[in-house]
Amino acid sequence: MSGGPLQPGERVVLVDRKGRKYTIRLAAGAEFHTHTGRVGHDVLIGRNDGATVVGTGGTRYVVVRPTLSDAVVGMPRGAQVIYPKDLGAIVIGADIRSGCRVLEAGVGSGALSMTMVSVGAYVIGYEIREDFAQRARHNVEAFCGEGADFRVEIRDVYEGIECGAGAQFDRVVLDLPEPWRVVAHAEAALVPGGLLASYLPTINQVWELRSALEHSSFGLVETVEVLHRTWHIEGRSVRPDHRMVAHTGFITTARLVGAERAGTE
Ligand code: SAH
Image 1 (cartoon, rainbow, N blue to C red):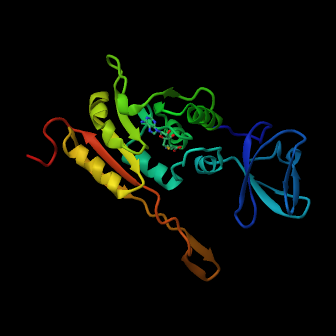
Image 2: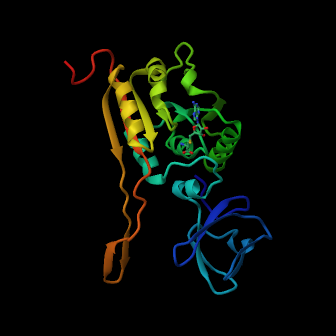
Image 3: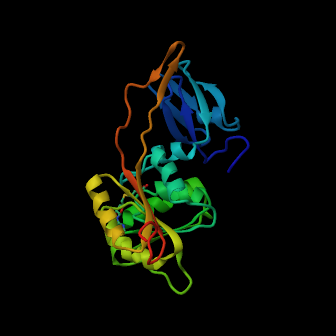
């Protein structure tokens, strides 16, 4: 984590009174423009995280360093990224922790990768598209720093997971269309008790995955969805917001429990 005053080269988020967010990279002499006016970066450089600045048109902005959630929403992306609400649930559901060795596929824009690296996991990603792999490397490095424990390989995970002697994984985390084709590979690559997690947009896909898990050494299977409803709180008007994102994806988790599956004796 970087502390201290804001420096040139850093990404920051300007938040206006309506909560609109603008992500910019600070550069000496540069200016940030909106239809209401402009703010010179030199006014921001040297200020503390959380400072308030006023643009030429009188608009006030709070300037903050991006949270992980801000970074995911504001970063360059090609593939659909996983929403922050689901990133949090995957970290807990797949029990991603410091020191975990994680095989992730596909990597996409790297939103899930940077989340897992941020909690201290060592992540190896498989991605079939070179352009996505490059972007993910860039995004993870921009948020987690150059020394991030993250490597992307151009590989099709349906063809297998490479794990030499002793190089097994604690977790396999999947965000791709046909995760059932990875179940047997994950069985071979995971340590006993290891976890498999999969993120899927439709319940038909979940059904297909759950069927494959039924015929595997995985047990303790759970499928969840996360409903995230924000609230409007202003004076005496206190109620849920009118709009919400009603559906993103289903998270399925399972543990490698060996030949005798839990609950089947
Ligand atoms: N979780 C990512 C988004 C992943 S999108 C994020 O948070 O940013 C799904 C990705 O899976 C795409 O980039 C696609 O190219 C990749 N993919 C699809 N099939 C694959 C396969 N068989 N092996 C590896 N990657 C695959």
